[in-house]
Structure formats: C-alpha cells, structure tokens
Length: 191
Image (cartoon, rainbow, N blue to C red; front, side):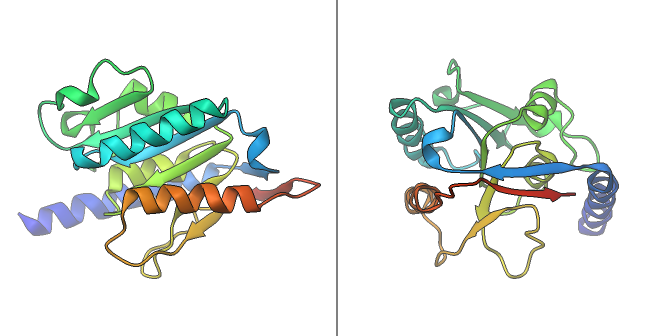
C-alpha cells in the first residue's frame, strides 16, 4: 500500500513539474503599505491553529488588507469553526485526484487569483498544498525555509526552529514584509 502511495505521489510531482515548466510569473513587491490582498495556504488538519489565523486575518483587516485562506482538511467532515466564514475555504480528501492533485473549482480559483502576497502555512509539506502554492499566480510568495525540500517556489523564505508555531511564523512574515521597503519594487521574472 505504501509503495502505491509513493508511485501516486511521484506521478503528482511529475504533473506539477510539467505545469511549472509552462508558468511565467512576474515577482513584484514594494512594501507592506501597498498590499491589498493576501492569500494563505494552510494545512487545516490542526484546528487549534485556526485561532491564530483568525487573529492574523483580523490584524490584516485592520490594515485594509483582504485575506483569503485556503485550507486542506484530510478528514470527511469539516470542523464547525471552518464553516460559514467568507475568508476561509477548505477542500477535502475527496477533492483531490488519485495523484494528490486538487481538482475543486475553489482551488483553481485560488491558484489563478493575483494576490499581492501568498503565505504558505504548510509546515508538513502536504503535496496538495505544495501544488497550489507552486502554481499560484501571486506576485510575491512567502514560505518556510526547508533545506531538504525544493523551496524555489518562494520569493522569501523564513527559517525557524522546529516545531514551528504558527503565531511565531506569521509574526516573522509580517516583520520581514515590513522590513522590505524598496523605493523601486522588487521585480523579477520567474518561471
């Protein structure tokens, strides 16, 4: 059974690699005061982390920044706290295909949304979330540094001691986004 999962994951990675070869993205970031939208990819398997994301959403909302969160929940039934929120959408195991590729309309819409910043909160490197963050059309992508993984998806990587606490991570993300303040914008073509 484990061998079959590995084959499925390798096939999923192959599909992702082919799609990444066709993607052209313009990296752009100037400073936090110009951010209008943030997309967050989140491993929703830990409901206890939701309170920190909710707090972050509120803080950004107070700055006039719209935050949309897309979570992956591997269970069958979503916890009640994940439902009826306009800023949070979750997809579940039945919304990924045999090769762990997300296939819902919500995930496709999230990938194609031009967020000013994408924040990856996928500390366990769940493939469906890696797939989405890799293909996202966001202008600037932030993720956790991992020397063992290919983190070329991210424009800014943050290194923290494990186990990573979500509130510390989000605090560091904001800190470094506030530090970047280029007169001209950070721009680069990335494929």
